Image 1 (cartoon, rainbow, N blue to C red):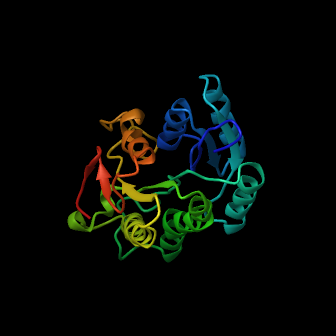
Image 2 (cartoon, rainbow, N blue to C red):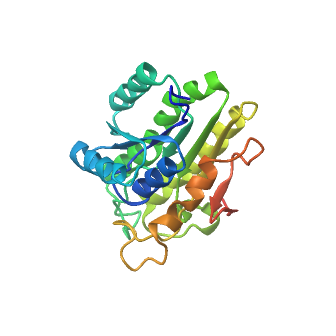
Image 3 (tube, rainbow, N blue to C red):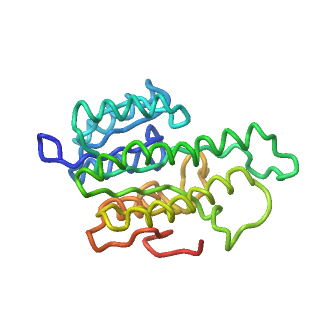
Length: 236
């Protein structure tokens, strides 16, 4: 915990949508929440909005596709708090909606994997060491039902594959650190009213973030290595 006795939470891709709502709820629950985004102006504006609601938040610029950017955030955390208790890998892109796998430009596939999967992988590699030191951590990888191989169908292959490998990463990591009090889970928020989900989606931002908050605050006997939606296990 930091000198004020609060646990530290990091949320990627948090200047809007589910990430923004996750920061709101975590900060209101008493976590010192580090809101991150690629766009510094938008990220700082998001923090200012949440600070008006009484949350305890800090802004730090972060591009998960840039390993140097992740390293800078880790150095900031080391210098100021020397711990990370909660990591929410929320940053993501959906660049090939409805596109056939046979017409998918390889650069779109590469960019999607770099942000949605490799970015999350590098975030875990950067911040799990903090959790190991303190024998405590909660990692939530924000995936999608479109990443479930049990329900996999055609089109949007880049997005689906990126979430599929994120889910596999979750299982691998959870098993490797299962003897430590670090929980690693993945979740699907469902169809949420965000820029990605559109205005017709049935779920509010609060509903979309609910399972993230649940997984971020699991007790020591809570699940790890699971895939959840609405706080319930779903098919891989």
